[in-house]
Amino acid sequence: MHRRSSGILLHITSLPGSPGIGTIGKPAHRFIDALKRAGQTLWQILPLGPTGYGDSPYAPFSSFAGNEILIDCHELAEAGLLPDSSLSALDSLPSHTVDYWAVKQTVLPLLTRAAERFLELHPDDTAYQTFKEQQCYWLDDYTVFRSIKNYHDEKAQQEGAVSTWNTYWPIELRQHTSKAVLEWKKDHAHEIEVLKVIQFFFFSQWAKLKRYAKEQGIAIIGDIPIFVALDSADVWSHPELFNLDKNFAPITVAGVPPDYFSPTGQLWGNPTYRWSEHKKTKFTWWIERMRISMELYDYVRIDHFRGFAGYWSVPAGNPTAEHGEWLPAEGEALFKEMEQVLGKPLPIIAEDLGVITDDVVELMENFNFPGMKVLQFAFDGQRIDNFYAGTNQFLPHNCPIRSVMYTGTHDNDTLQGKYSKAPDWEKACIAEYLGYWPESFPRALIQEALKSVSQFAIIPMQDILELGSDARMNTPSVLGGNWLWRMRSDDFNESRQTWLKAVSLRYGRNLPENNSN
Image 1 (cartoon, one colour):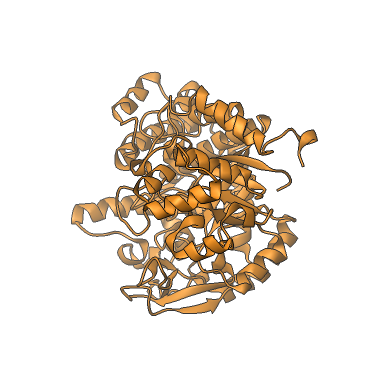
Image 2: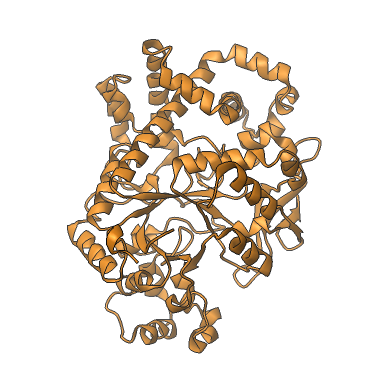
């Protein structure tokens, strides 16, 4: 972070201009053009991993792989890997919301067809061979995992069962024994190679996109969850790094304790880390995870950063997160090792929302990681006394320079949605802070975020478009109906781009390097 910058939070899935789902092809390139016209220099996205049950990008099948359904099939057709006629299958997909099941049913066969064509035409492709060598740490395990999972998921569906690797797979494959894995690789060699090619497509298209973003002066802020899903290649291939029993079931799971928002806490269910084992390996898994994140992004936001100082550990099987305990993590040792291997400063943004203790603050300060400030929290009811005292940490004038100001995150309601339902006293607090009663709460608060002293300011696209609660990206702890929203092609129009550019410049954001402070 070196100058006052601003940008937009918009996930790839929400991009317009492609059937079914946003892609990392032309839709993403067009959005970079729009960001540039709007005078922005930052683009924040959500995690890019392959999503499973619930479609959450925060519970992917791998911490390293790319989500195959974000690959642009039209680019593959242009490269001669798909006939144009095959793309008509995409036309039946909805344009203004994401139906993940329908997208997977339609896109995955096209990707398989393109990968098989690639292997026919380019069996010794140098770039592909280099990709496999560079990504060998995770690629072999991931593609074998997905091959086994595809087979047993289909078998489980026929039997009306639920398939997870630690309960449904044959015991030898659960145990990841060399013999069983080698036999599977031998018997399914073609399918595994196809899965590797599909990952090559993803990383090739992403590299092209990132180069284009850099040429246009746009930095990409990526996002990684601190914990991983149990049903993932990470846990299957590295069970020793997680608190699992001899049957590979979690002994303890992650969450957060009861608080103002939830009297029973939040039980996430992710297996917790066995930090002593990570330390023995000099944090190899974490360092490889960060290495690939630094290849993909310019900055890396880490969700639930406080878990690197201490994490809430709940015995598996508990129905709520009430009966857990805080246990220490190894963040200090981890980031020291990371700096040694990957260099410093590490381009990390810490998601430090919630109850933050002194040890978390110390960890962030020791490594100069900026935290997050959410403007919606500046006027919440539980913080009303702080507001009138002028001490609320989320008020723009109270934010440290080394921070990232958001109007809201993917977990918040939109500004329009929140303030269409907010009580009059909350709106009055905002009006008192502004010095006037705004015609548009979203526009007024976007200006406050851009005006703040925070080095970076990020605005969710839904707030720029002044959309209501039906455009909300995620409602935490609610199953179904999340991650579905898509922008329309004419939403972020010239008028909105011109307004955003003007207000960003007014508050010293995204100035040319020689004019920046």
